[in-house]
Amino acid sequence: MPQVMEFKLPDLGEGLTEAEIVRWLVAVGDVVAVDQPVVEVETAKAMVEVPCPYGGVVTARFGEEGTELPVGAPLITVAVGAGDVEAVEPEDSGSGNVLVGYGTDHSRTARRRRVRPGSAVPAAAAVAAPAPLAAPAPAVPAPAAPVVTGPVPVISPLVRKLARDHGIDLRALRGSGPEGLILRADVEAALRAPEPVAAAAPAPAPSASPAAAGERVPLKGLRGAVAEKLSRSRREIPDATCWVDADATELMAARAAMNAVGGPKISVLALLARICTAALAKYPELNSTVDLAANEIVRLPSVHLGFAAQTERGLVVPVVRDAQTRNPESLSAEFARLTELARTGKLSPADLTGGTFTLNNYGVFGVDGSTPIINHPEAAMLGVGRIVAKPWVHQGELAVRQVVQLSLTFDHRVCDGGTAGGFLRYVADCVESPAVLLRSL
Image (cartoon, rainbow, N blue to C red; front, side, top):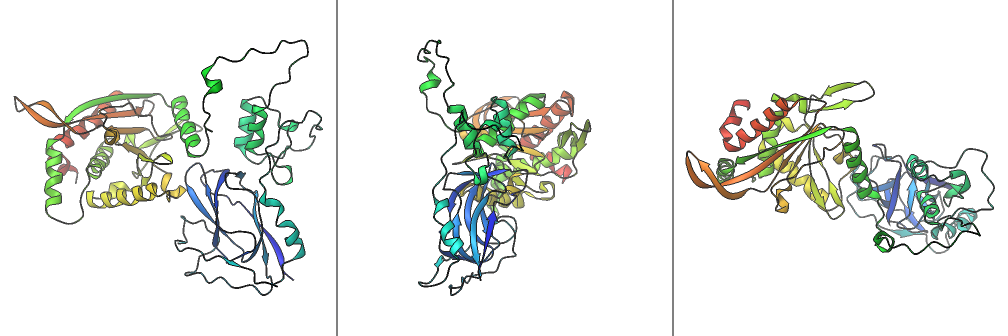
């Protein structure tokens, strides 16, 4: 007799508590194999394909595309052991119970199969299948609803925080999730609901605020995660910025000479990254983080170098692991690999976390300078403007040189201005005379 198994949204790691359904990869009635991806979800960090640990017939899906679900909420139900179903032969075998992007390679396209006509599907599954296809309507506060006396059915701490910040009593809400689970949509619906007006109170005048009629874009997903991280950086980190103009003519000439001998091309970003790792070896205070709980500065042994990349989904910061062990050629290859994954939306959460220092090349946008916001919980970020021909005094004479502005934003708790200035001056010296870098190779 087939057994109906419920597959819930798994823990996606890195402290993520919810995800939005972007695209279903299976339909009710499809046959799935163990570890076959069944849905594509978007977290605050990346797009992730979620594989199902059960093989059998899909009998129900929970949530339409665009629905936000908390970790632990049901995703699908699968009838395991249903009779007379066509087997799905994956083109390669999975390791089982892992998320795509963390270990198993699920790059092949899963072949969708359905139950053969006349095959048996459990009666309970057949009854349950159609209902979850309709997305539940967001709940609004019901004035006559009884007050909940037991535990409030909320899983996500983000939902609790949203309600707390806006003074919403979760006990007065009816959840639209499975078994009455209160979702973010329920709290947002409560925020949109009109406030009760006393009978004697005059009707409020139409708001003249531009925000009332303006377009509203939900601050969630990647955009919301970026906003929260930058806000936290500003709240917690007493940052300061210093900057310097540098003559990058010799650096550009050195790059041209490297690329003239053949082999993989070396990028300017890779050369700047190699300079940064050498500078961090001289000034390790800037490759650190602050442990507020212990009231300690933690200096980190490895440089996991983040770099800012603008994508259609927004700003992401992929991380090059152990950058201090890589030469310019290896750095160029890793930058190219991660940039392509970012462009196609295939970065895993593991690719976007664990950075210790960030390199931000905003010169690609055609600007000279900026005051970067530190990528919390890191301690510093180097910003690089465009490299452009400018008048410059060179060897006592006015000349046209390739000039770049470098800016360093740093956490003033981990070091003083002398350390930050020393780091930035060393970077500028290496840019102006790449031979300086040879002393640290």
